[in-house]
Image 1 (spheres, helix red, strand yellow):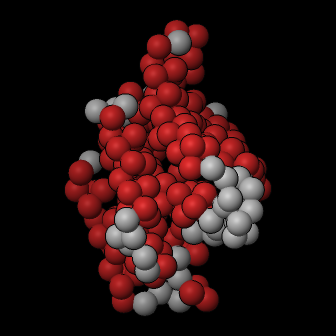
Image 2: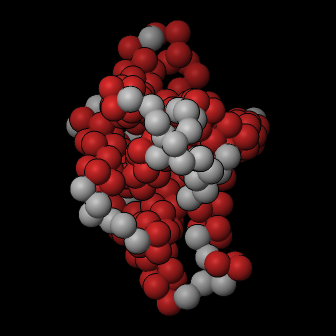
Length: 222
């Protein structure tokens, strides 16, 4: 499940784009807001208490490092993680976007094998991200083979991160710090998604509803 569900989440997101199941930008924004709230709730309710219970105060620096890493990654992806896609129609493959999103996906997959509560948060998060990436790639003149290959790599990169962290023994002593790093990434991306999902930073009833649903559902699951 640790490897299959994140992969299937990307596949489902791509299929939504290919078959035009979710065409409305407003609905995608709502889905992003829900995923951001779900991530935030998981990080605060489940992961943060566990990290601080099994480590010292120095783990806080790793959380800060995760925030910084996500800021750097967004310089590559240009904010695609929270709904900003800047790809020219009929252009080349947006390599910086692909690399930024793939590195993000790799990092967030690292602690999944030790924190099952994180699995569903990542699955929920990857669905709209996969949709955004697929939509961006479909605007380019890149061949279908290249597009499919890029999306396949993106689908596999989170399970790959999980596999590496679970099997490479040298990483085991740093497991708690890796989790703290991912918490920092999650805190940054989730709060940015929530606040940028609102036009002019104003929340309407539907956005408030999906955010509360995301927060509450994650809380109930943990």
